[in-house]
Image (cartoon, rainbow, N blue to C red):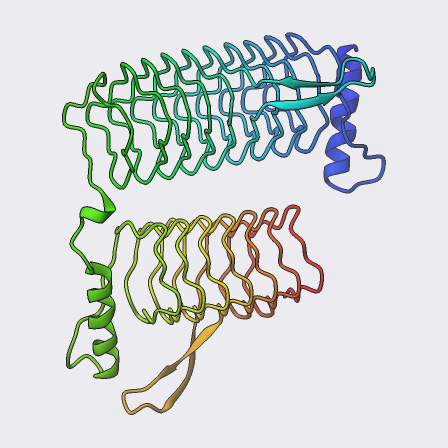
Length: 425
């Protein structure tokens, strides 16, 4: 393929993305693009499965939602590139540079290749990132199960909520990495440098930590039963079990909050749960209207049927949170991460402001989801009318029969969202 062909394909792809006449989706599958010079190229949603891209320059390129199944990106420059939700199953990234790249939601599991030759059967292609540079890359929610990251540099990488089952990190540098809520079941962390790493709420069952450096690491809420740390460096390592905390702390705050609401503030106290780790808790039907939960971790928590009128949930980690039929009218969810959350039949509308005597003021306080992440969230039947949805990311979410009438959707992203029956402004 000549450089002229590549330029033509990229131009047609740009028109296809813009839904213009003459546009055609880029199909560069199994093409030899070794050492190609494509910095800043827009290859969003392109087909690059099996492509040879060794030593290619794709710095700052947009490869989001790209099909890169079994592609060879060895020693490629992907610095600052966007690989958001790309399919990299079975891809080779050995020695690649991915510093500051966006790999959020990327799929780096081993890939399954079914041969047309019946005698050869099924082949498993393992994703290889050995000796790759991923410093300060964003791999939030990525799936790297069984991938090879041996001797890779992952300084300051964000792997929060990532699926890392049986992933090989031997001799990798994960210093300062964020692994909160990650699933490291059965992973190999032998000789890994995890100095200052954050592992809050991570799963480590069956993981091998022989010779691992955990100096200044945060292992709060990690179940260490059966984990051998005898051969690890654990200087100033923070370990606190959820079960070792003060019993009934949350229940006590909820009871005090209920008294505060029913007495109009005369007794009890407004619940302040800012920054607390409430991951996995069952808070079904709880009434925390007007409570402050700024920056709290509610990952995998169950808040089905909860009443959170006017509650402040800004910046909360609510990945996989259950909020089915919850009432969040007037709530502040700005900057919250609701990736894959269950928001079926949720209410996120406005609250009418009342005067000091309880009379109507004619003013309304809308629910605020500005800048919130709702990637892959289930919002079937949700009532969002009048909500502030500016810059909210609904990529891949299900908004079937949702009501978004009179919402502010300036800058909101609905890429690949299901909008069947959705009422939009």
